[in-house]
Image (cartoon, rainbow, N blue to C red; front, side, top):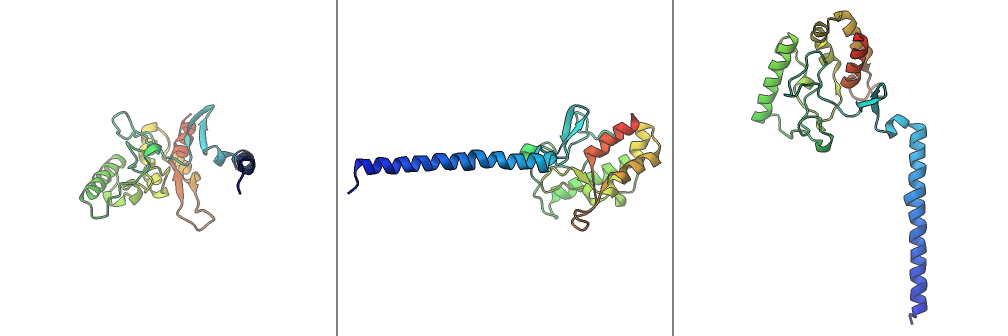
Length: 202
């Protein structure tokens, strides 16, 4: 027979157990994991932020557009790959276009981008790499291929009045190798490259 005393004791045991697990798993565990993250991987734990002086200018994990108010590419900067996230690199709307390779809108967008990139960089449309034409699945990819970065060197150098060889050397110094030596492809982080470019000019 269940008595009031038994019921109260059961509730008190349940309450104490909930409080203990809340403290252990909700507070202590969080503090320990956060502490380990701050000690072992502080940059990653804090969002891989990139600073210019005392200002946070972005994250190494999220791309940015280098365009004017009308979304026209600024020729003095290296350009990122296209983005389908919101109005472009919107971290709150991460997504790809979800268009298939035979979608008419995607084909038209690729042809338009190919013509624009070729014209602005003074190259043949056949020389424009794929990452200059298509958005990543997340729409937030901060990297471009070394081929796309090197293709932009003459334009950027001319716009800034810098020696082309110096800008090319800068790009080559910023090429990130494959992860673990074999995963993925070599990449260039566009924001980090542009910050280094500003320092080179300065």
